[in-house]
Image (cartoon, rainbow, N blue to C red; front, side):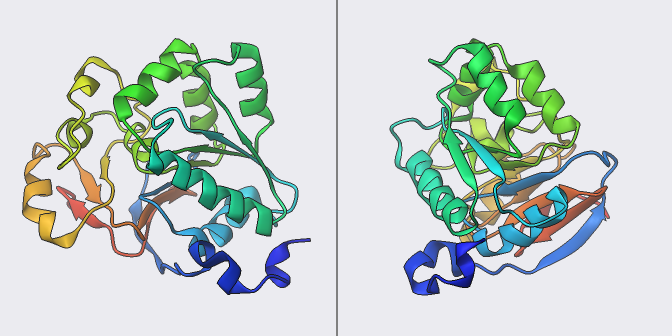
Length: 242
């Protein structure tokens, strides 16, 4: 049984303090995707979304985390700590993989056995290189396209796009090496995570007019499920024409 029925919210403030409202933005052509793309948090709102895409409660569900975009970085550790708390209070299992050093078979067994795949933040270029070094790109893409729930924080959200303009030119933490890597190409828009409102004009200029994207604050997320593109909180659409 989920510990949320017994634990005081003050003990898990990172989990409970974000309660972003979710609204439908537009239909999405790929009806098979179950994708949640936050900057950092969204954990109170994450539970009902996952329950919906998993078709029931979260008890005994398995979560696999790929942290390789930011190993030894605070952002990757932060994602792990939040997930550890989230999975603990919801009676779930959490396994963290090191895809740069583990054998391919062990990695794929863990991914296939998982109910939810999570990728944390860091550098998009490093994350993509790690995926290709492990030779698991096609398997990960296929799993996501077939509907395995995917949660991508920060770089984990950015890697899912067809292009990498935001990652290459990210304000304060550019990733120029990403131009030599191929993103996973599952979604047809880009995510700019950790967005602050005063950066809007600069962020907007980073995308060519023919590329769509969302500026996502730390407590926002973009969600795709059941053929719908949903917004949690208030991500700002860029170059979208509804």
